[in-house]
Image (cartoon, rainbow, N blue to C red; front, top):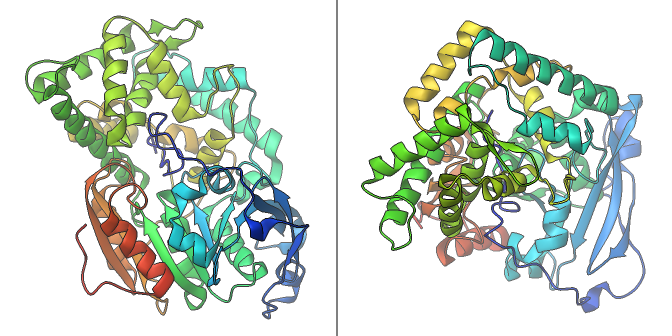
Amino acid sequence: MRGRLVSAAAVVAASVLLLAGCTVPPFLVGGTERSEPTGERVAAELEPFYSQVLEWERCDDKLCATATAPLDWSDPGAGEIELALVRRPASGQKLGSLLVNPGGPGGSGYEFIADSVDYAAGPRLQERYDIVGFDPRGVGRSTAVTCVDAAEMDEFLYGIVPAERGSDEWIADVTAANRAFGQACVDETGDLLANVDTVSAARDLDLLRAILGDERLNYLGYSYGTFLGATYAGLYPEKTGRLVLDGAIDPTASNQEVNIAQAVGFEDALRAYLGDCLSGAECPFSGSVDDAADEVARLLASVEASPLRGSDGRRLGADALVTAIIYPLYSAESWPYLSDMFESVMFGEADIALAFADLYNGREQDGTYRDNSTEAFRAVNCLDYTYDDDPAKMRAGAAELAEAAPIIGPYFGYGDIGCAQWPAASEVERAAITAEGAEPIMVIGTTGDPATPYQWAEALAAQLESGFLVSYDGEGHTAYRKSNACIDDTVEDFLVDGTVPAADPQC
């Protein structure tokens, strides 16, 4: 999978999040607080986990706690991991907890709620729910996947392979780099690396529900978080409360199908940006949208052949430039910044493009990485899909991508190499999730979403026995709290009052 399913939490540098203030709400004044578990009956080997009492402590203007979960849900006695949580208590009459996942895989739900709860949940939700962010297993403040240091990560993400893309020599070089990266991950992470799949994370989600004291799970998931939420509903339909899945993933889509859909989605978003750019006065392109698209293709081919060097010595090749293009396409609000980036690359300058790629990759200006999202993204996806690095099959897949998306597609191919070399083998088969018997589940799709195309939301809503589709006609990735009042009201009416629209409101 080439395009990371980044979330509402990490959309673009230009779409600055309005962070919650530091004033301490009156209901947080005081010492620690305890959450009592539901006390439900579970298997004896799970009892120590489901009976734990969370001890909440003040952290800035919220409350924080750490839960323990089995390292391996199939063998609960084999070890434990930690799961980090942050909670913004309900300001009014409480309905329960609302757990939030911002996407990824690898996105930090802890940081999402700690830094930007107002972006994650509107005032009505904050009044009626404890808003709970958590880092899934393998991510951030929870027991995390660890692989390489910053310098090695730079080489892995930004290194240039001199051979022709797709040649035997190129495949051999990329295979060696990915094999070394995977070995570093298992050396540093150990047994956890084989246990960061989404099914295990969904079992963690049920544990968190229980020890937060909720009989049913209420959940808001963005992007990859929709797959986590749907997986939960498939495993525990009888414990599913009000679920909102925004920017949905089709559980049946294979790795290649995901790559094609995302390549087409980003290319469509690129063309939408170009059309908007050409209608303004300060666009670095000229002519028609097709003319401008051809210019982007030439830029990518140029840096593929002769990478540009940034002021810090790093080189900008085609892969990094594709990342720099993709990042602002997550939000139409960021299109003006994309114009600045294109103009700089046309003048032979790499710094703005490298900065955009850095934002996507979580790289700080000092060369460090702010989180482990790259490692977690790779580790989870390698367990959630199957991969085949047979050169003939990969070349056929690359040709299919290039035909479907002539500008972006050529740089989305050969992704199977990374996970085919992964030390934690996956035998998972992608399958529909029906969640028979679950309460109504809201699935939101944005017509111009480049990362999770609208047809995936249609597919998931159709698969879920109780799924219903809410459509947003617009651009950008995910819709709640960033599109319009129609979406926000529909989501909040459902989560607060249980209101299911009589028909798709077509927001």
